[in-house]
Image (cartoon, rainbow, N blue to C red; front, top):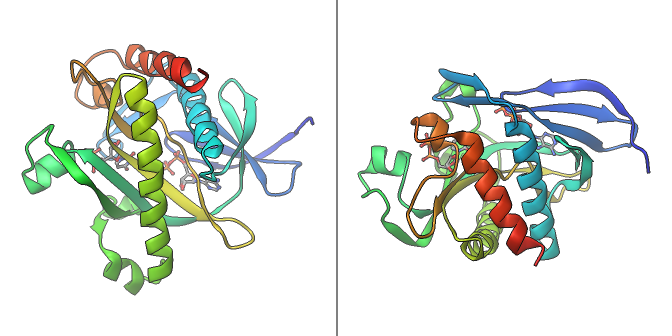
Length: 241
Ligand code: ADP
Ligand code: UDP
């Protein structure tokens, strides 16, 4: 069924959303923009939007196949998907299997140390506060979510982690850590939204620990497109086999 693109409703750092003629369905377009360190570092990288759209679609479809519901409906074009419109819960849910990033900088974990069981963290989605880490008490006091919802976010994020660890392992990569965002559908159900891409996941080569994700851009660790292409090609081999 043909879906008509209507007006732009939101443009963020990495994606643009458009209304459509289908009630409750948006077009989510992935931009070629890369940002890091609160927007301090910025670049336009041709081909990034396409690769992120392909990778996110592939992973959301794989999660659905495994019974893990999410907002992905269908592809729209090369760089865009149709997604369910959600009322987002302004919390980032981070899951960590291996120490890296802020866990090393802030808590002194040894880089590359395996973490078992995985760590789940919540961050407030608030650019003006630089997305601070928060605990359940903060989230409840701010009136963002209650205990039942937070339990659900934790349980669901860990299920997504189990599935993604397996998929990336089969594709010869280590899923170091990643960030998820959830929202509520019209019926009140909590649904996984946003994106699952190398912008939001740390992915290392399983044999060499070579960085394949956005850390290439953050820390000048190599060509971003080359890393994202490797991720996409390896996933294609395992997800459709
Ligand atoms: P940012 O807003 O941080 O610059 P993006 O450019 O990635 O980030 O824009 C994504 C925005 O869209 C985020 O605020 C995210 O919470 C929101 N979002 C993600 N999925 C959905 C959805 N299905 N419905 C409505 N909003 C969504
Ligand atoms: N992450 C993200 N968006 C954010 C913050 C973090 O997608 O606003 C992802 C990041 O790519 C990594 C994981 O969440 O995969 C953990 O990030 P961390 O807390 O280590 O922060 P960073 O080192 O990115 O500042």
